[in-house]
Image (cartoon, rainbow, N blue to C red; front, top):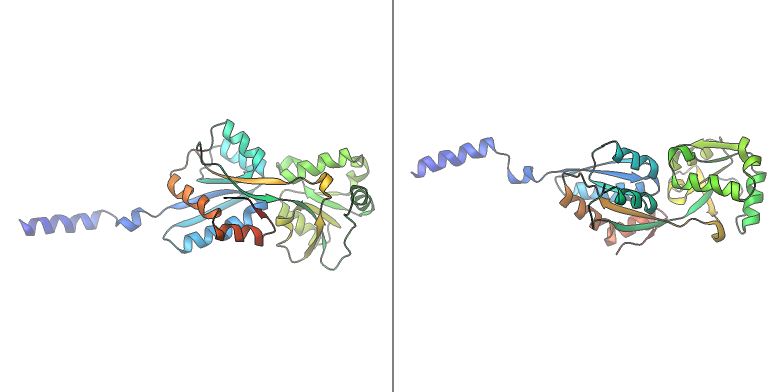
Length: 257
């Protein structure tokens, strides 16, 4: 009897994966460019401390919405609050899983070593744009929060026509920084957290407060996730001291609990 039981247990051990292996997950996150650095940092640390793996896709808020709508699989999504509002209405995120993570500000970058423009007032900012040889920001067609805002701001300031021939469009905030570093644009405007990592540029400052667009980035569990528990645990980690430190290091203001 004992021998028969031993044989059965041995057979089960050969055909069934161990519990630890069963617990392994590949967590996939869809992440807005402004918060991609800290999310990647915490995700990689989370993976190192477990047998799980972490992968992420960086895109604009509009691009991420389109990815989910097209059926792209994911477990976690982090994007600007207005985009999350839309996803919530479409029932594309798990009810009650939404959590505020960080606040981003729009800044202006110049090539490293170049003089900084005057950003002290709205009029000074407007004059700096008109004086600049060229300006790069994310194309509104790419669905970027900052780019859509700046495109409208130029119209509000009454300089859209004057700036039209100077604009160097890019599809990501990091690409805006690349354009400035390469000398393809004199000024670059995007969220500071997308400009800051590029050592070839310097963030000259943020937009004047009267025309600033403080943007809350929000995380949630994707409704179709097959790893919902792991996704919730990851979002909680993003609000821990570790996550808050990662956001702060990236030039973002942590707002999670």
